[in-house]
Image (tube, rainbow, N blue to C red):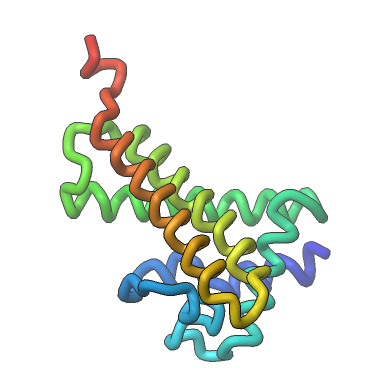
Length: 153
């Protein structure tokens, strides 16, 4: 499994995907089709996300470790971006990484739900999308009010 899984995870290149801005869509269709910049198209994109969704909590320990490592790297780089943008000033790097880790985990959980949506269910899709947006808003609203222990004293 390691021999097959690690190259698949490396192919996904989450960190490279992060650097290519994708406009926020009002629906989930673009995600279900795959990003337009993914060179192998829809089938490969969906396979990779289904693979990650299944292997994040099951399967080989080695693959789980690689996935968690990629998630941490992605969250760390996202935290660096947030720091550079000044999105959440005054928070420590550790706290910023924790917040970005919550975002990454939320979106990876959302990915498997999105991929399992039945086709041609626009109301269900919209409801799911709105729920994910609310979850992310809650994370960032909480983050804006968060005070590191040193700051709270």
